[in-house]
Length: 152
Image (cartoon, helix red, strand yellow):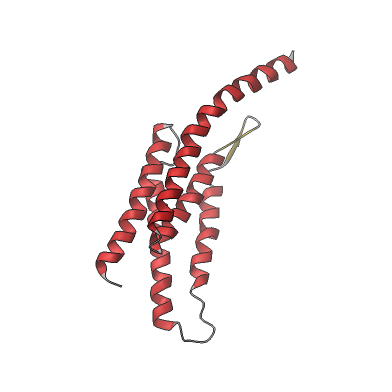
Protein backbone atom coordinates (compact mmCIF):
# COMPACT_ATOMS: atom_id res chain seq x y z
CA UNK A 1 0.00 0.00 0.00
CA UNK A 2 1.36 3.41 -0.94
CA UNK A 3 2.00 6.10 1.66
CA UNK A 4 -0.42 8.46 -0.08
CA UNK A 5 -3.23 5.93 0.31
CA UNK A 6 -2.38 5.39 3.98
CA UNK A 7 -2.33 9.12 4.63
CA UNK A 8 -5.67 9.60 2.86
CA UNK A 9 -7.34 6.89 4.93
CA UNK A 10 -5.98 8.30 8.19
CA UNK A 11 -6.82 11.91 7.31
CA UNK A 12 -10.39 11.02 6.27
CA UNK A 13 -10.89 9.09 9.53
CA UNK A 14 -9.41 11.93 11.58
CA UNK A 15 -11.43 14.60 9.75
CA UNK A 16 -14.76 12.80 10.09
CA UNK A 17 -14.02 12.12 13.76
CA UNK A 18 -13.23 15.80 14.28
CA UNK A 19 -16.56 16.79 12.68
CA UNK A 20 -18.49 14.59 15.08
CA UNK A 21 -16.37 15.84 17.97
CA UNK A 22 -17.07 19.45 16.97
CA UNK A 23 -20.80 18.86 17.41
CA UNK A 24 -20.16 17.26 20.82
CA UNK A 25 -17.94 20.22 21.79
CA UNK A 26 -20.64 22.65 20.65
CA UNK A 27 -23.10 20.80 22.92
CA UNK A 28 -20.63 21.15 25.85
CA UNK A 29 -19.97 17.42 26.13
CA UNK A 30 -16.83 15.93 27.60
CA UNK A 31 -15.56 14.03 24.55
CA UNK A 32 -14.88 16.60 21.86
CA UNK A 33 -12.89 16.98 18.69
CA UNK A 34 -9.61 15.49 19.90
CA UNK A 35 -11.24 12.43 21.45
CA UNK A 36 -13.41 11.63 18.44
CA UNK A 37 -10.55 12.28 16.00
CA UNK A 38 -8.27 9.97 17.98
CA UNK A 39 -10.90 7.22 18.19
CA UNK A 40 -11.61 7.34 14.44
CA UNK A 41 -7.96 7.55 13.46
CA UNK A 42 -6.97 4.86 15.96
CA UNK A 43 -9.57 2.51 14.53
CA UNK A 44 -8.25 3.25 11.03
CA UNK A 45 -4.68 2.53 12.17
CA UNK A 46 -5.70 -0.87 13.56
CA UNK A 47 -7.51 -1.69 10.31
CA UNK A 48 -4.43 -0.73 8.31
CA UNK A 49 -2.20 -2.83 10.59
CA UNK A 50 -4.60 -5.73 10.16
CA UNK A 51 -4.49 -5.39 6.36
CA UNK A 52 -0.69 -5.17 6.36
CA UNK A 53 -0.41 -8.27 8.55
CA UNK A 54 -2.85 -10.13 6.33
CA UNK A 55 -0.67 -9.36 3.31
CA UNK A 56 2.51 -10.38 5.11
CA UNK A 57 1.31 -13.46 7.01
CA UNK A 58 -1.98 -14.32 5.30
CA UNK A 59 -0.80 -17.76 4.21
CA UNK A 60 0.33 -18.77 7.70
CA UNK A 61 -1.83 -21.32 9.44
CA UNK A 62 -3.83 -20.11 12.40
CA UNK A 63 -3.29 -16.43 11.63
CA UNK A 64 -6.48 -14.37 11.60
CA UNK A 65 -6.02 -10.63 10.96
CA UNK A 66 -9.76 -10.15 11.51
CA UNK A 67 -9.15 -10.54 15.22
CA UNK A 68 -7.44 -7.16 15.32
CA UNK A 69 -10.43 -5.51 13.68
CA UNK A 70 -12.96 -7.28 15.92
CA UNK A 71 -11.06 -6.22 19.02
CA UNK A 72 -11.38 -2.57 18.08
CA UNK A 73 -15.01 -2.91 19.12
CA UNK A 74 -14.01 -4.41 22.49
CA UNK A 75 -11.50 -1.65 23.16
CA UNK A 76 -13.97 1.08 22.26
CA UNK A 77 -16.49 -0.59 24.56
CA UNK A 78 -14.14 -0.05 27.49
CA UNK A 79 -13.42 3.53 26.48
CA UNK A 80 -17.12 4.28 26.01
CA UNK A 81 -18.06 2.66 29.31
CA UNK A 82 -15.74 5.10 31.03
CA UNK A 83 -17.77 8.01 29.67
CA UNK A 84 -21.01 6.79 31.29
CA UNK A 85 -21.74 8.03 34.80
CA UNK A 86 -24.66 7.70 37.19
CA UNK A 87 -25.60 10.95 38.94
CA UNK A 88 -28.77 11.85 40.85
CA UNK A 89 -30.58 8.69 39.67
CA UNK A 90 -29.80 9.56 36.02
CA UNK A 91 -27.43 7.96 33.54
CA UNK A 92 -25.23 10.49 31.78
CA UNK A 93 -22.85 10.03 28.88
CA UNK A 94 -24.76 7.39 26.95
CA UNK A 95 -24.88 9.51 23.79
CA UNK A 96 -21.17 10.24 24.12
CA UNK A 97 -20.47 6.51 24.51
CA UNK A 98 -22.60 5.71 21.48
CA UNK A 99 -20.92 8.49 19.54
CA UNK A 100 -17.47 7.13 20.33
CA UNK A 101 -18.58 3.66 19.30
CA UNK A 102 -19.95 4.77 15.92
CA UNK A 103 -16.93 7.05 15.41
CA UNK A 104 -14.73 3.97 15.73
CA UNK A 105 -16.87 2.32 13.05
CA UNK A 106 -16.40 5.35 10.82
CA UNK A 107 -12.66 5.11 11.40
CA UNK A 108 -12.74 1.41 10.51
CA UNK A 109 -14.64 2.18 7.29
CA UNK A 110 -12.06 4.84 6.42
CA UNK A 111 -9.23 2.43 7.17
CA UNK A 112 -10.72 -0.09 4.75
CA UNK A 113 -11.08 2.67 2.13
CA UNK A 114 -14.88 2.62 2.33
CA UNK A 115 -15.07 6.41 2.16
CA UNK A 116 -18.68 6.58 0.96
CA UNK A 117 -19.79 4.46 3.92
CA UNK A 118 -17.74 6.61 6.31
CA UNK A 119 -19.21 9.87 4.98
CA UNK A 120 -22.79 8.55 4.90
CA UNK A 121 -22.43 7.27 8.48
CA UNK A 122 -21.07 10.66 9.55
CA UNK A 123 -24.03 12.45 7.97
CA UNK A 124 -26.40 10.08 9.76
CA UNK A 125 -24.59 10.70 13.06
CA UNK A 126 -25.15 14.43 12.55
CA UNK A 127 -28.82 13.75 11.84
CA UNK A 128 -29.10 11.81 15.09
CA UNK A 129 -27.17 14.33 17.19
CA UNK A 130 -28.78 17.46 15.75
CA UNK A 131 -32.18 16.70 14.20
CA UNK A 132 -33.26 14.09 16.71
CA UNK A 133 -32.23 16.46 19.51
CA UNK A 134 -34.67 19.01 18.09
CA UNK A 135 -37.45 16.38 18.12
CA UNK A 136 -36.58 15.29 21.67
CA UNK A 137 -36.85 18.75 23.27
CA UNK A 138 -40.67 19.00 23.25
CA UNK A 139 -40.95 15.36 24.35
CA UNK A 140 -38.60 16.00 27.28
CA UNK A 141 -40.57 19.10 28.23
CA UNK A 142 -43.81 17.07 28.33
CA UNK A 143 -42.06 14.30 30.25
CA UNK A 144 -40.63 16.75 32.81
CA UNK A 145 -44.04 18.33 33.32
CA UNK A 146 -45.57 14.88 33.78
CA UNK A 147 -42.91 13.95 36.33
CA UNK A 148 -43.54 17.16 38.29
CA UNK A 149 -47.28 16.54 38.44
CA UNK A 150 -46.67 12.92 39.54
CA UNK A 151 -44.58 14.16 42.46
CA UNK A 152 -47.39 16.36 43.76
